[in-house]
Length: 250
Ligand code: NAP
Image (tube, rainbow, N blue to C red; front, side):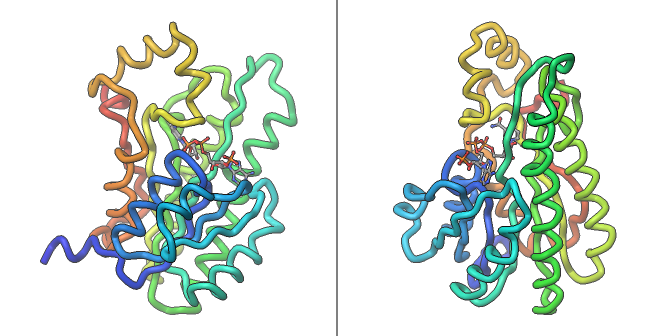
């Protein structure tokens, strides 16, 4: 049955940024699809844990440094015994005019959104290769993997790079049965866009350009996230799927 291909029964997923927003939605979707989920967050994912019960385990870790990566892998293996799926969702954005943009705002964003994403993917791919059954890596990019944005140079750099790294890793790891793909969310109503949504002029401009006529929600991302984590996407490699209400096509 075609729908069986989308099931995640018996799979173990690591999702970073599991306490809120898009990451919380992905955790919920994976648990509903049958997976055990390890959420990585720097603050406790209390609400997510309450929603998902025994299907969920929380690793507390600040992903601004790669030092935490061995512990993320170890705690996941201790709890659930294997890893099948990694979603690199945790991300941070800093807004400042480029003419004044600080080195701190550059490094903060690049460390979380790019450096840790790469080295966590590498660590998880090594585990996939040890297990010998392939695996799925999903990187959460952005419209700013395709466009320049305004006042967010480090975020644009990180998300454009993530789209490229997604293709590079797919090229190297497809032969091990590891699918590396991305999702580029459009404008979604989460903490990440709170400042934008509070700016009446920017918010109206953005809304006017979305063909679907509304901001996205975490639930809007869940279908693509399950598809790319499941056997239904076994022949999809290195592609970043836009879930954007039509923004990019406009
Ligand atoms: P969000 O609600 O702000 O979630 C971001 C998540 O990343 C939070 O769980 C946050 O934890 C976590 N995080 C940030 N820095 C971290 C660190 N150093 N260590 C561990 N966790 C850290 O925003 P969101 O919209 O759900 O964002 C999720 C992903 O989607 C991000 O990669 C974002 O760039 C991307 N995205 C969002 C949109 C949008 O419109 N919302 C559009 C395109 C792409 P804390 O809560 O502790 O900060």
